[in-house]
Image 1 (cartoon, rainbow, N blue to C red):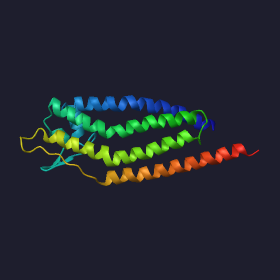
Image 2: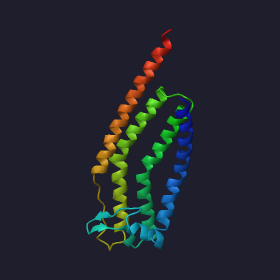
Image 3: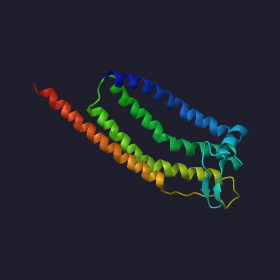
Image 4: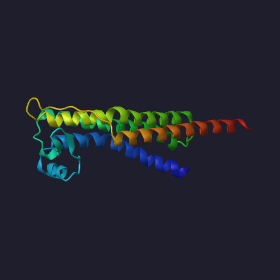
Amino acid sequence: MDRIQKVSSYLLVIFNILLVILPFSLFILWLFIDHNPIKEAIEHGVFFSAVQTPEGLVNLATVNWTLFTKCVGFISSLVGLLPILLGLLILKKIFRHYQKGQIFNKDNAQRYKHLGYLFFLAGFLTQPLSAMLQTLAITLTYPPGHHWIQIGFGTPTFESLFCGVLVLVISWVMVEGYKLQEEQKLIV
């Protein structure tokens, strides 16, 4: 139990750092997306993969970015990051309980259920919306009549749905573990 509490303490620090670093680094990335070091990294697929538009695959390093299109691109990436940030907040609550030695409790089971629903939200809403906004950000630099919005569901959507089902099953197991723990407290 001590190891779980110790690891939980470390993970809480990591979650807090990620909650600050992820949005900040995303902001910096989009702010300087058209500057050489970042542009070269994007050309090699380090930060972003190519985006499908009606004209074909577009590498973000080849786009002529304006302040407005950078803002739309940042918002698109932030929408895609939102489930991760919310997931980190939920995990912080779970690991605070673990840090106190409270593994099987009703609150943890509820938090796991929230994580499962968050995967569904990511698969059905945030991932497609993020991709749609990113395509819009790219095509806003095209001449009038060539702007494009598309929404689609693909493999990442199904991966999120599958993970959501797994986490919901884990929440169910946590509820059953909580019930067993409560029954054992009543047995003398």
